[in-house]
Amino acid sequence: MKTLIVYYSLGGNTEYAARRLADRLGADTLRIEPVKGYPTAGFRKFFWGGKSAVMAEKPPLRPYDAHLPGYGRVVFGFPVWAGNMAPPIRSFIAENDLSGKRIAAFACQGGSGAEKAFAKLRACLGAGRLEAELIIIDPKDRPDAENDRRMEAFCAALKA
Ligand SMILES: Cc1cc2nc3c(=O)[nH]c(=O)nc-3n(C[C@H](O)[C@H](O)[C@H](O)COP(=O)(O)O)c2cc1C
Image (cartoon, rainbow, N blue to C red; front, side):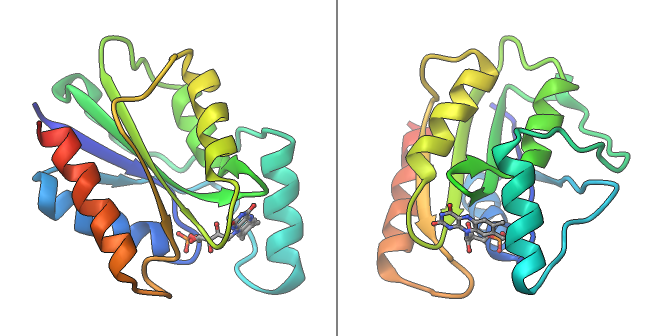
């Protein structure tokens, strides 16, 4: 089963996790970026990113080539923003046909909100459940054995 990890990362934590998971799963990765980037620091980062997430925006994405027909599984990776998935993931889902694919997801967060974000992701996909879900805490900025354990369990579930 070929797997593509589609992720968005503002501060590098989701990217760090995506690379580690790709290594373990033998997966390819696709980093998506909005045409108009979100602020990366200070109050503006939380204000504009949070507002965009709460409004369920679908910001236009920079061109990408996903080669989706070649993959049986897509793993979405995103930071949790105000209890939502980061908006570029919504854009990707809206503009691609994911029918027939297995879908899993991982969320990076600083504290809480990932469960709510997963519920919104499932609603967005029209899926009752995902193949596997993983929640980790700032894996690049705050390395932690519990993050490692959860990542291993996620990979094991997808390999089973
Ligand atoms: C706009 C914004 C909103 C956020 N909202 C939440 C939140 O609701 N819950 C939480 O635990 N962390 C929240 N965070 C923290 C990030 O989810 C967390 O630091 C994540 O690991 C960052 O991933 P990244 O480095 O790939 O961007 C927020 C960060 C930003 C920028």
